[in-house]
Length: 304
Image (cartoon, rainbow, N blue to C red):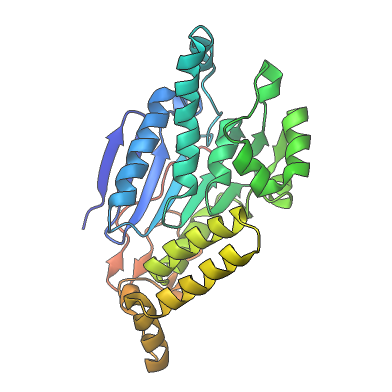
């Protein structure tokens, strides 16, 4: 079965038969710097993927040498000559992109190489799991050009904490992948020959888990983050587990556990034991065959 591919300007979306969606910013000649068109392309694809019942997880990446250099400066220059109202509308689109990625109902993984600057850090912080190549460089550089990291700030502060955010937002200093992992911006640092294996293991884990439980757990995390531990949250959590226990997938999962069989949603999944550390093309195996698209786009990592 071939994967389905859809291109919107400089944004490419692929979905394979297992429901793994690959969303790529494809503007390598501009270091994947984003402008209004790319923001709208990402928003459009996220909206379509959210409605697609076949989608199980999402991988976000940038093609070429760099994940993203952040906002396109020519775009920023053009907006500086427009009205405050126009700028408000433009900023609202970027804020909406962050929100839509943050609340995307399925697990998300972002893969980072080269530069990840400015607004690109917002995209990273909105994903559930982040992998960076060992040579990746990060920075919140907005104040250097008289701007502020406004729309991404809520997600960056949540991910790395206000204390670290204040340091890196105020100094605009660059930092490497090891530091990014230390402060909680990314989860894993990988070399070129390891990133596909880490990607495969993420996908394998997701495809073995209940789709409904995954979506509800993401919503639960967001709800807990925004709520004090008071009566409302306590009531929400008790109602949620009661609802899930009697749901179709809740019943199926419990029955499968006691029957010592795989639940129905895992029938087409591949297990972690089948993953190969040598899977440089990401053509990994499952019980029914190979995953039918390659997770490319991270080539030429050694070039700067």
